[in-house]
Image 1 (cartoon, rainbow, N blue to C red):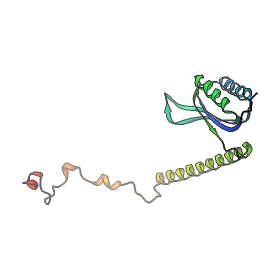
Image 2 (cartoon, rainbow, N blue to C red; image 1 turned 180 degrees about the vertical axis):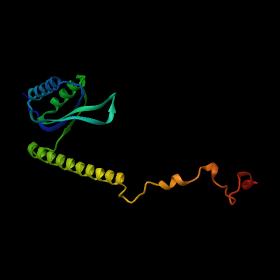
Image 3 (cartoon, helix red, strand yellow; image 1 turned 180 degrees about the horizontal axis):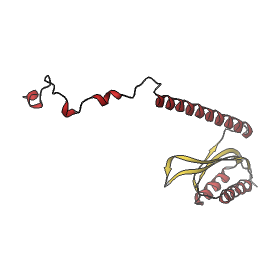
Length: 172
């Protein structure tokens, strides 16, 4: 067997939200078999669950997200991409080559730390939004509900302004 350079990769796969757990397992068994046949190894597989897409793909607004890291050669990546293009349940996928100087275990540690920080920021942002919403509903933010508008007369009942010229007078 020829000497193949193995590199670290990560893949994010978006699957049809209606795909069953069995179809998802079959996809990852197939991917694992391809990686191992080409002399690679899988480090981790994570399910991120069903999420709303940023932009609609076809008629789908949601997708099932998966993230995986593994070590493989370029031939394995080509075969993985070929099989995922054939699979109707796979909506999108992206393989990214990782920095070889960082071991996969360290990469995953940093990755999970970044995910946790992002989740905390999102929670803080949501808490601020809820606080602003509650303040706006109670009127405590300094703005009135503009009740003075109801006291104004209708346009037809307002007196005509004498300082304003009509269009004919203005341009003649």
